[in-house]
Each structure stands twice: as structure tokens, then as C-alpha cells.
Length: 377
Image 1 (cartoon, helix red, strand yellow):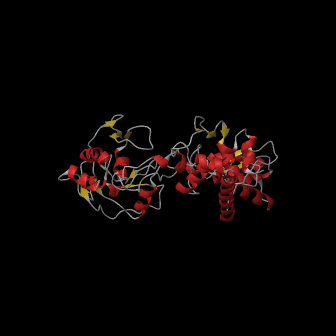
Image 2 (tube, one colour):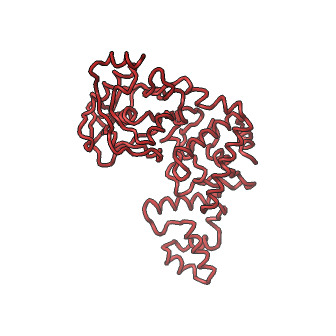
Image 3 (cartoon, helix red, strand yellow):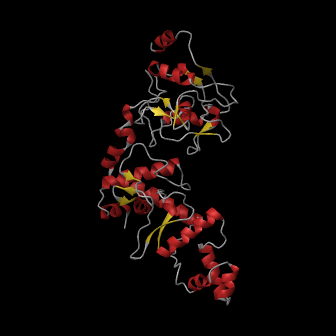
């Protein structure tokens, strides 16, 4: 059964399959194959239909998003009524939709993975894991008594007996991934996404964010009479022109680099930052909320619905580039609400080069109107 058939059997349309594939590829590109694709922490700005109201899974238009993600990766439910979707112990979020973090197994596999999570969390040597199950059964096959195995691995005697007799923890055969099987999974997923786009071009064109939304948008770095920073946005709402400049390590605090429409907002933001030397933290002096635990900076965004952002996010936008829904992080040793561009980073965008210095700090202009008058000619 192919991925499209899986969507149709779940009463979803081919258009839904195209949209889900776009989200799939966006997470694969932005977060990579190894990290959790948590819909709660990293919600995509331009797609709807996903809900995280249930504590144990993400749903897409009322359907289990984990099943759809596995279908995109070429993993389908076998003809076994006892099988369920099992989340691997390495996965940190119940709202993750990374197909490499799930497999079809049995309720005993769920119990085993839960034990594995406890072992990871507490370092409990007695936690039941696939490796321990294999050890118990192999040593039992070599003639070791159940009592000695229970003592050796600090298990209840009856638990050890049921494991060795395969009454519990029946394996689905899909618990462990090696490097080759993971590579095959991602190759299959990428090819399935390509096939979905190719077989349904009209839906793909309609849903493509660059076609449907961002052709009409500009980022704060866009200046009139320029075709840069306009209508060129990615699936996380980031300006792709800015992302290219981020790769080169762009970093400046220069209000004159922005169009007149943005000049006063940019200037007002930096006036609320205590700008010190490049090596020191730049504290936010503006408003906060929630008892001083969150900074609040007024700055409208072409992607966000609200007009208030965190100060560190705006500082990154106005010094390095507009990165949309990407989360901005400061260093662990920074003071609260640090706005020094050299201390800020995007952990998800690993290709962005960290700047070695702030190339320019210019918060005013001797004759602002004259500057922009000349720039507009």
C-alpha cells in the first residue's frame, strides 16, 4: 500500500497528502532526520490541520499523524489486528512525527519502550530493554536457570520467567534500526514525496507557500527598487535571501540598512537595548511580562499574527536576518534577555555561520530624510 492509498483509506484527499508531504520535507530540511519533529515546539507557520490537543499524539485533520508519517516513509501496518504504533525510547516528545522514531509493534513493545524511557531517565539497570530481553533469552538457551538470571539482572522471578518463555515482550521485529535501514527509510520517504508532488502538480502548486503566500510578502531587510528579500520565503516563514547572507556570517546593527518604512521601528528597538562592548551581554531595557520572565518587543512580522516578539528574536532579525518561525537562543552564560547578536543562534539552522564580529554599529543618521531621499533616486 502506497502513501496516497493510506491517506485515502483514512478519508483524506490527495490535496491533504500533498500538504502533509510539504510539512514532512520542511521538518526533514530544518531539523534533520535525527531530531524530534515536535509539532508542539516547532509548529510550521503556513500549514493548518494539525492538532496537539491529545497528550500522546499529534493528529492531522482528525487522523493519527504518526500513521501518515510512517506511510510517507514506506512503513505500513501489517495484517495483524494486535499491532499498534510504538514510540521509541529515544524520542523525547509525544507530539513528534519523525517516522524514524516510531514502528508498528505490540502492546508488549510499548511496555518495553516505556521501561527504556525510565532507564534513560533514571539510569535504572533493571529497566526492561530489547537488549536485556535478548540477553535473558540467550543465556536461558545456554542453560542458565531463571532464578540465577533474575538475581543477576535484578528482576522479579516471574518477570524473568515470562520473558524467557516469550509470554511477554513479544518483539515485532522492527525495534532496532541500523544505519543502512535508516538510510533506506529516508530514501524511500524522499522519493515518495517527489512522487506525490509529481502526480498531483495542481495541488502542489496551490499549496506551495512561495506561490500561494510569500510572493506578496517582504521581509524587514527589503528596500524599494530591489528584488531581494521579497517573495522568497521558506516553509518556516524565513526569508531565504537572509538565510543565504546568514551563511556568510552577516552581522550588523545599522538602521540605515532598512527602508524608511522600517527605520523608526528598528531605531526604537535598539534604543531599548543597553548596547555595550561586542564581548558583553546587551540587556533588554524594554517591557516584560509574566513577572519579568518574558521580554516583549513591539515589532510586526510578515509571518506572525501578533505584533509582539521576544527581544532576542527581534535582535536576531535586525542584526543577522529575518528567520520567521525559527527559535532564537542565547548562550547559557548570558544575562536575561540578552540582545547581543554575537550571543544569539538558531540551533535548528546548523548551516548558518556564526559571525566573528559585528561589522557595523550605527543607530542614527546625521540626516535621515536626506539619506533615504538619495537612496530612493
